[in-house]
Length: 383
Image (cartoon, rainbow, N blue to C red; front, side, top):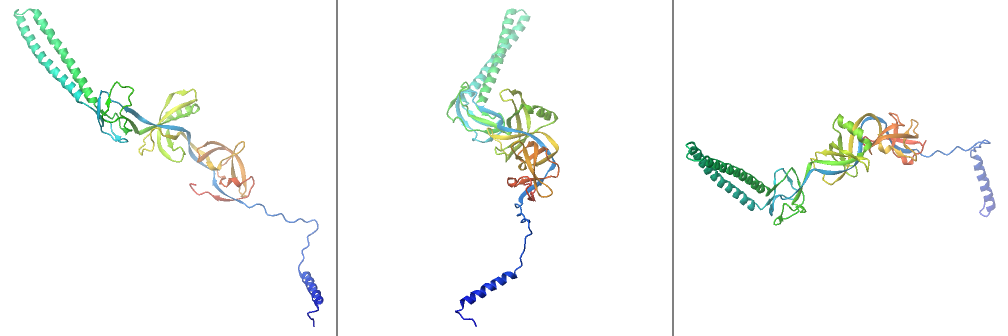
């Protein structure tokens, strides 16, 4: 029997029991010269991929353009007088021939009435002169009147006939001036801000005046932009083949504002910039384009058939060249230098470096390096 005071005996039995338990455990002995297994490599990088494919892609030339009205006019008075009324609202859409303003017509109506009365007076004199001439001719046949009288009265008739023609001209001029008192729209357009108020006196000869209002034709509307002179052969070839489409985008290049067609190009290349100016026409049915607005213009010169394309986001810029990452069949990434013919910010045309069917990385490139293991997920359609 063991008593509590026998501590030395208990300690002795505890040590012996621990030693026995350790001897019972299995022991693994490393062979001489063997190495520990290497630690596992870095985890696979998750990436998004898409397939290189052939597509028909438009070849685009682009630059910043300025929207200009198809037509614009500063409406001035063509006669002197007081501006009595304006018939338009600022910003209003008007049609050709619509009345815009009225100059006091009373002086010009009076001038017309006076010219008409003058002609009536001369008509009466001409009728009397013709009667006198007829009587003189009859008397001259019986030699009751000298021939000189006949000639004098014939000259009087011709003089009055000329006077009647002058009267007709004065009446026409008076009608024109009266018509000028009503200012009308020269074409369909949008009214600008009123530049002068009713009650002010306007003068036709005042070339320094601001006018009454401006009108601008905004449907259709034009966009003017410049392109390098090197693009001239492609543009001319496209114009000979048919109409060249032009698209206008917002300054951030995200919103399509309108589609149109190239109207014409300037007849001279700007020698200071080496560019040529072009003008495109847009229907602008929704009025998304406005005079003075800046847009990004894209001119399509041709449609390239069966081009090898990748999303623009897949193309990376290296120190000396462009490159993409592809995913090989063993799920490792490989850096491949490429050459790009056109990149419109969404789709890049690859002219060298890739083959149809390859898997290129479109998301996750920042964590990749050549030979890295990847876990590839196909990109969603339209993303």
